[in-house]
Every structure is written in C-alpha cells, then in structure tokens.
Length: 369
Ligand SMILES: Cc1cc2nc3c(=O)[nH]c(=O)nc-3n(C[C@H](O)[C@H](O)[C@H](O)COP(=O)(O)O)c2cc1C
Image (cartoon, rainbow, N blue to C red; front, side, top):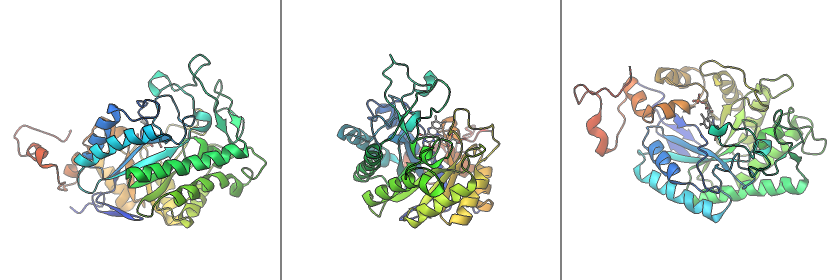
C-alpha cells in the first residue's frame, strides 16, 4: 500500500520522511528552566518513535514566562547548556531524517501555576507565586492571578526575549522553531478579543490585535537562520461568542506566510478557564484544512488523532499536511512503528532493534489488537 502518512513532506527549508509529528507536551520537570534527565530519556525516545517531526514542549522565553516552576526555559546560558546535552543525545539515536523543533512560549496570564499533577491552578502567595502579565488586567478565570497590563517597555522586552530564545535555539541546532500562539498563552491573549481590551496600538480591531503576535513573529524570523523551518501554533477557534474564529486563523496564517513562515499548527480553545467544549475525534481538522486551503501554508493539526488509519485519512483526503499526536504518543512510545506496520509500510529501524519486528518471532505481537 502507498501511504501518504509515510511519504515525505517539505516544510520550508527542511524535508521530513513522514507526516507524523509529536506534539509539544509540557513535562513540568525542569530545574530553573533547565532540561533534566527526564527530558533526556523523553527526547531520546521521541527520536526513536518513528515520528519524523518532534516538537519539544512549550519553552519559556523568560523566567516569568514559564507556566510553572517546573517548566522548561531558554532564557539563560544554563538553560541553553542543559538543552544542548539533551538534543545531542536524542540526535545520536534518532531514526534517519528525524527533525527536532522547539516551541517558544510565554505563558502571560496563565503563568505562575502549580505543575499539572498538582492541579494546574494558580500558585498561592506562600508558594512562590510571581507577577503575571497580559495585554489587559483580566484574569484567566475565577480565583486566578490578576495580570498586570503590559507597558510598552514590557512589550518590547518580551519581543526581544522571543528573539533571544530563537538565537539560542538556532545555536543549539534545532531544525524547527515554533512560536506558541495558542492555548490562551500570551500571544493568543493579544490575538483574542476575549483577553485583549487595549485601546492603544496593541489592541482594538483584528489588525491591531495581531500587532504583537506579528511583531514577535518578525523578531523571531530576523533572529533565525534560513535553514530553520519557522512556524506557529495558532488558534482555529476560541469556541466563544465574540472570540477568535476560523477567519482569524486564516488571516493570521496568511500574515505569517507573508513574513516567510513555513508552517502553522492549527489547535483551538483555552483562552478562558473551561473554554473548550468536549470535542470529537480529530476535532481541529476542518479548521486546519480551511487554513491550509485559504492561506496556502503547510499545515499541521492535532487533537484526538490516535489511530493510524485515521491519521492516514487526514493527510490523504482531508486537506492537512501533517498530523501531530500527543496523548497517543504517551500511550504508545513506538506509535510510529506500529502505524507503519498497520499501514503496511516498512520503517527502517535501528539495527539493534530489528530482531523484534512482528512476524519474525513467533508469538511476539508488537501491534496491539
Ligand atoms: C501532558 C500534555 C502537555 C501538553 N503541553 C503542551 C505544550 O507544551 N504546548 C502545546 O502547544 N500544547 C500542549 N499540549 C497539547 C497537545 O500538544 C495537543 O495539542 C493536545 O493534547 C491534543 O492532542 P492529543 O489528542 O493527541 O493529545 C499538551 C498536552 C498534554 C497531554
């Protein structure tokens, strides 16, 4: 069988041998932003998973821009050094053609929270909570921190921090840089009319609300060499009356393309606490397909994509270039291998592991029923 999922994809200056990506997933396991042994094992495993594109978790461009005290950062030499160790090790074992990306982020009004397994709520005054910032002084939800409205100087410093982190990522040798402009974090907070009530040049109509996201995008573009694929995770819909719609996503993606961006990943929701209704299988695909059709940019999507034939169908017939998996990857760290088997594709495995391919060892069944 010819598989589109296992066919190559050109993403700006890079080419990947298949269309499977591992979506960014916060691990809350860093030490003052520095990657630890947890990240070492994780990225090494990601590299061997069969997914040709690996995007590392949301990585704070400033210390205060981290979601939690355990979140990864790229704001100091120590962070850069620690991440270099992890990336080098992952590359050493990765399947041929695997490309590694980093997601650069600022958590805005969703910063200063507990790590995920402690409930993700805001830190209390005796839990090392810190001052959070946002376009407007509106909290994410009831009992959340009230963020400070950012001054012009803070806006410029944050744009510079994104550029500095991009320089560090380039120095480390990442193949892909993805700006996190979704999920209710700072860039999304500027884009969405739900969280941006400013009346100066950084808020107002759609053009003004895009000014900060595009200023960040331009700064990151200027800081990144041309051999790196640049993209952004954007919002397909806020799921709210008066929130962002697929039209806004198309506009944002088109503006990014005009600024030499190579791809977008279309996600959705989370601009307010509980701002995401229960959703069905592959729920972001229709908005992603529309963005790809109308903005003409390489488009990835994620969201309840877990079954290989479904992933194949999405890239073969539903108008999206690349799929990303998050929870399915946690569930099955060799998801890519098993997808290849299910789709009848021969994946080149590391020689050390070839003996355990299904069928060569009677009684051994790698593919789950
Ligand atoms: C543990 C965990 C951590 C996540 N962290 C991030 C993140 O750092 N950045 C991001 O853009 N999305 C993050 N997400 C969202 C995922 O990237 C993905 O979009 C979402 O889980 C839907 O995909 P899935 O149905 O395959 O899990 C996270 C999801 C999980 C489960």
